[in-house]
Amino acid sequence: MIGSVFGAFLAALGFALLYQVPLNQAWVSGVVGAAAWWATSQLGPDGTRGLLGNFLAALTVGVLGELAARWRRAPASLFMVPGIIAFVPGFEAYRAMVAVLQNHLLSGIELAVRALMSAAALGLGLAVATAVLRPVLSGWAGGGAAISRTSGKGGD
Image (cartoon, rainbow, N blue to C red):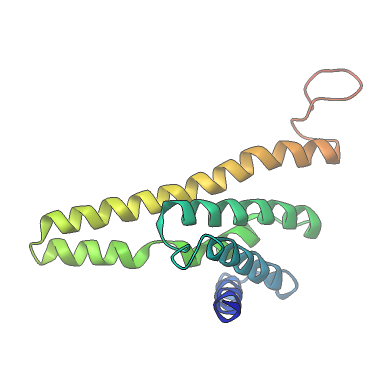
């Protein structure tokens, strides 16, 4: 398990460098990706597969990405995109296209729907983490859309 978590760290770090994330921020992207991989591995031996695993991975990436963005004073996307990329169901989408091209229409449709549902689980996990954490973290920082403590009205 430690080897796969380290591999996830290297994968996220590699994508961070590929996307030209500054070196002083790229290692944080690697930690976010490794933490997401570790979280899904806690679901069992096949924890990295399936909708629940993808949702948990995206939720982990979203939470840690938002926290890292506040900590490092950088955009959250610097940490979220490299952290989530290892979970994108690209191979499953490729297998769906190959099945359709080989006239295995039903299995191709099944694989395509599975890939789309996996991608939706990733998007939902990121959206939930961002929708919950951004207002909370903005409230702690005293800005944004949080309710003002003095007037009771919305912020700027």
